[in-house]
Length: 201
Image 1 (cartoon, rainbow, N blue to C red):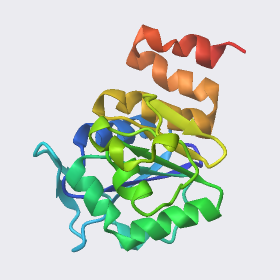
Image 2 (cartoon, one colour):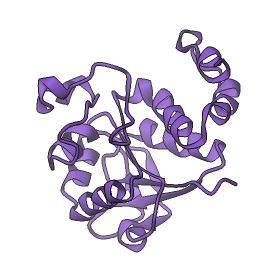
Image 3 (cartoon, rainbow, N blue to C red):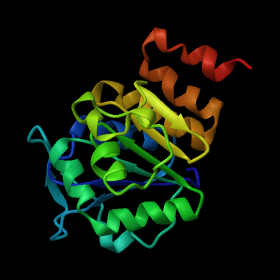
């Protein structure tokens, strides 16, 4: 197992495809993954945006002071709103920035968490089109996955880009070889050109 530590934050209303894809891909990479519930009552069993129930490893408050190589925020409007209302989430992200560690957010989370609290005011961000009006035009990216190396931020658009998003997290944390090792057996779309991206140069 890798020494890379990943925190995936969830709430009631989190988009399940985005959450489970991130969990699965991080585990395929051999990363140490903690799935934490940001539920105000500390409930570990959460109901996601389409009614799927997922059980978290821990309440967010019990792991918030631990160091992580990347904190991942799935979307889903209700889930992202809940994450955005959590002062603890905001503090965790600020700590990531202080530690020069990565943050990754997808779907509604870039707008409803990061932009809401002006956590990355000079970073280009992608997000779901339904909330794109909440990100200033000069900082809005239309890319399916946007990586800002200067600010150590990865953002993405939604469930359909969730695997690309997760593989990009593996790429920035573990390098090209690991990203290809994880991606190849999952049969990614040929038009992503992962073999060329991760095995050449």
